[in-house]
Amino acid sequence: MYTEKVMEAFQNPKNVGEIENYDGMGMIGSEACGDIMQVFIKVENGVIADAKFKTFGCAAAIATSSTATEMIKGMTVDEALAVTNKKVIDVLGGLPPQKIHCSVLAEQAIKAAIEDYKSRHSA
Amino acid sequence: MERIYFDHAATTAVDGRVLQKMLPYFTEKFGNPNSQHAFGREAVAAVDEARDEIAKLIHAKPSEIYFTSGGTESDNWALRGAAHALKNRGKHLIVSAVEHPAMIATAKELIKEGFDVTFAEVDEYGRVDTERLKSAVREDTVFIGVMTANNEVGTLQPIAELSAFARARGIVFFTDAVQAAGIMKIDVTSPAVDMLSFSAHKFNGPKGVGVLYVRSGLRIGKIITGGHQERSMRGGTTNVPAVVGMAEALRLAQEEQEKNAAYIARLRDRFIGRVLREIPYVKLNGHPQERLPGNANFSFRYVEGESLLFSLDLAGIAVSSGSACSSGSLEPSHVLLAMGVPEGLAHGSIRFSFGADNTQEQVDYAVDRLKEIVVKLRALSPLFPKDLKNEVYPKRKEE
Image (cartoon, rainbow over all chains, first blue to last red; front, side, top):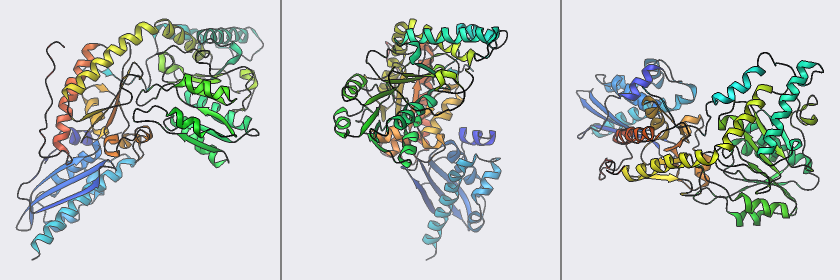
């Protein structure tokens, strides 16, 4: 049911962990729903210099977390805001239909982290 | 990589001896039991023999054995067939809250048809609360259905007590013995039940064939209409090789039951013991003693079940998960929720079900891999508290 790319990203996820002095953090989901994703970003001159995540969830949730954080590194925050779950799924070579909602989590957590960054740095 | 199969509650391999019995009925003895000629008579003889054998094994009469396509059909038929046949006497049905979806979904359909259903509650171990079930009985209660053993957590139900209670009041009592058959002795006279279901592929028989036992004198409605097969109660050409295989599989399973159950229980106890001692923040779901010999169901805190299932799969270990994510729905297991397991823990539940073809080496290998996987997934989990150490404990020397 999962593509090889999904299984690879699930098995050897990149960017696992936390960033101590992060510039933005977003956490989406709930334990009751079975999916929680937490994203940390470090921003330098408007560019995402580092991104890390922690995810409680299924293989698809972990794979999309890894891939999405990998994609946004090196992007400007506005470019990162344009990363949709659809783009993450494309990179992974597709997800089973019942797993699409897991990829929405990654998109939302990244958006929440960027919003957190913007609210901290707007003043 | 060696593949390790710890999912015997899902299905089992067909025993080689069973397959040998079945093979002639695919090729040279392929007749339709309804045909009048020699080919048909050959098939009829095989079906009759299978029915006699199964009846003898479970202490029933051959005329009380109905062949079906498996557990789901048998469960559907028992519940729907009884409800429809008895509706002039009453329209209240009681089934336990932890029944297989074959029962739960059928009960929900019957509610739409105007029946009234009570889903009997269970305790924290998944056992039906007998006093509450009894107090739910009304004047118009006509059916009580409680499984012999639960498919997810393995908990054995107080069937003897509930069956005696129901039958003393003229209420039809049905038990789904799909998980129990083969691994426990099935005897429809002890405890005496009105109806009972099982499925061959759970005890090394073929898939797609099962039995509904219906006590003689009890009339239920049909759900499959057609020809005169199964004494005009269930249309459809009999799956001859499958019923032949089922009879042989049940015979072997009952013959080897004591030896196999004791062996499997030892594997299970070793597995449960090691997991509880060596992995912290783990909950054993189901009853600590009153459970199927082959079932161990755990919730691993801070870890989601499907990611655990796939990690084990990548290590060659096949298990199943009550996690919503693996079943395609968003709700975690209805069984664990009925037992009061919090949703977060229910999402992290994994069922390991052992069989006679498993070994102690496989159990030890699985525990060792499981420890590594749980640590890895907890390191990934935003729920794992920062003040706790993400660790597991060494295996004891004497093991």
